[in-house]
Length: 152
Image (cartoon, rainbow, N blue to C red; front, side, top):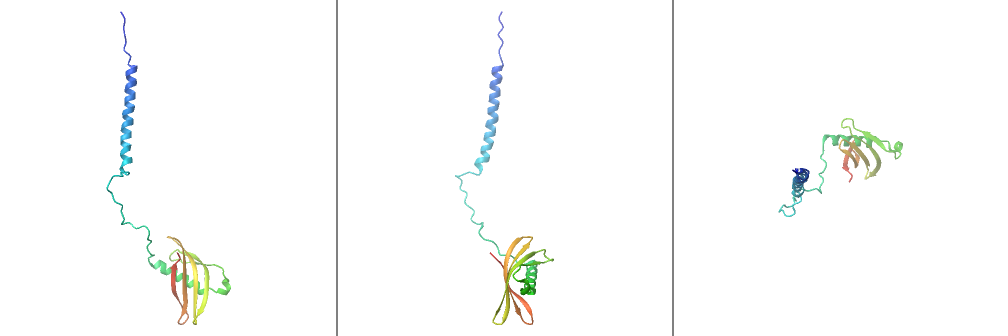
């Protein structure tokens, strides 16, 4: 009598291959949902034109900026230009934490009015910026800040 045994090795190989194919198919189908969701070229979605990225709002005047302007004005007006001799003049405002360096002060006497034009940096919590301004001697020895504007 002859016994013929059936091998399960061939059947197990087919099951393993089909299992791998099923897992790969499920993974592939789930990834196609991720990739095609944002790349739907046939949709009727319109471009949102309500967003404007080319404008920068003007700096809001706060008590900190006014305090810094006053500190810079005081530094410019109290500087002895003959002793300064073109050297930079540092300033600091303890109440705001801002500081900077005045690198240019030019005094002019136009129409009997003494004015000083200056250029400074301002290092503050919101970054570093360049400013220019003008202050003039008015009345009984009082200096008035006529302009203080951010450069750029």
